[in-house]
Length: 280
Length: 340
Image 1 (spheres, chains in turn orange, green):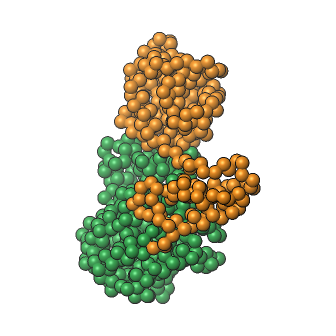
Image 2: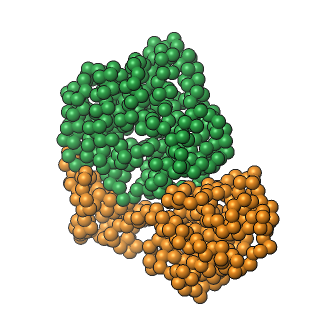
Image 3: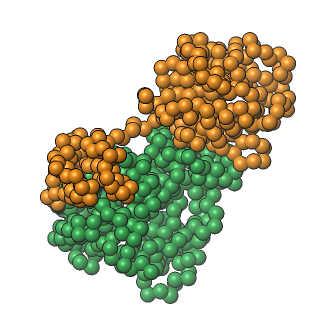
């Protein structure tokens, strides 16, 4: 199973996602209960309308694999004064005008517009001053931030209606048309988000901890010592040598901890260079 | 370059706010109610945010000046600290802020006058003390590194002219000393530099000036008549550390006049256990968090024998140049014993 990070895009409606599905040639999965489209390092989930659907879809896709994810909710929103078809990144989101807001940390590069978003429970033709309106964003943030750091959980909206236009003109075809011009800009932003995912740190397996006869505490301490030796760039071969002929877990731990204590880090080194215990 | 400014509603009209905002004409501005909504929200990752921190302008409410831990005394009387800013433009791997704060955004408290009033009020309570009362700045940020934007020293240093029984210590690694060199020095301000040998600084103090540049700034300040302090804190254990520190100490005390240095302090790499655990999660691969450490009484520091060996060796080097009454060495095990 791949552990490479993936961009997970969550849309409420298929007509909103259609330009990405087509442009990226995503394949529809057999998975249920949500429609899922996948490609290289990208997955598109269709949640359906409303908070409950959104939260469930986020939990469902997160549970399918433990891959590190960046999350991007893309959809339509109403706005009092913005032009139809305008794209913006959400810089603040609240469930009511007086409620506590969530401010997604804006770490990934984005030079386009940003705006606040008010998340409401039902379709509305009321446009609050200074914010866009949608129905899923708050649930999206709350759910996705259980699985990834908040810097990696973002929402982008395309204006589908405003005070002048109202919502009467909207249908599936029109929504797809409004989303279509933004495929590249959204994907560039997604790539910037992806670049923020920290590289994972892994410890070379030199010991089968599962099969070792030892208490949980001893196994944890052995794990910690192996982690320290990896961080100090001690060769796996060297660690194996130290453990050679050892069958008792406590003796293994003692030897590993002695090796940790006796290894002074060497400045300016690259991988694999350490110096043994001269203390100066 | 900061590309996002969060501004509390309460400070929108302050002069300091306008001055800071004018430095970032292209940044997006987001008005917020309270800084905690941004700074303290959950699920943030300090390491990720450090790649592109935003700047938050806010009002510091409640207490602005706090008593400083006893171990930070440098021969003065009562001692306090205050933080006009949380977080720093440098990225030092050992910095405790990575373990203490959820956010790497720069949080600047722009109600400077409230800080100054509280400092004056506390100093007034100590007016009959035998020794002056010390106010430390630079625990939770670098005192000078953001000076072109914050004008912190430019504002606070003159205020201490009116508080003769108080001393202000500015803690820094920065070469932003223009405002200090542009005025007459005052005797109750000490500029204390955190120094590390060049190879240590290169590896652990990303974005900070080199040792040579810090020494140039120190030399200018000393020649200009400012009181200066030297801080090797943390001293970092590594292979060949005695030679690395000996070279650095030679260069420091041959460049500067040791007789006119206020104090020299040394301390090993140490962190409260909770901070250490957070930092290890952020940087699991870094050798700093995996070499020579042990935990005692909630503090993670070098193993006691190792810490003594390292600090004693560095202290011996310092004693070649400075008198014992100016040298302060903080041993983690003694600090723990002295805790109430």
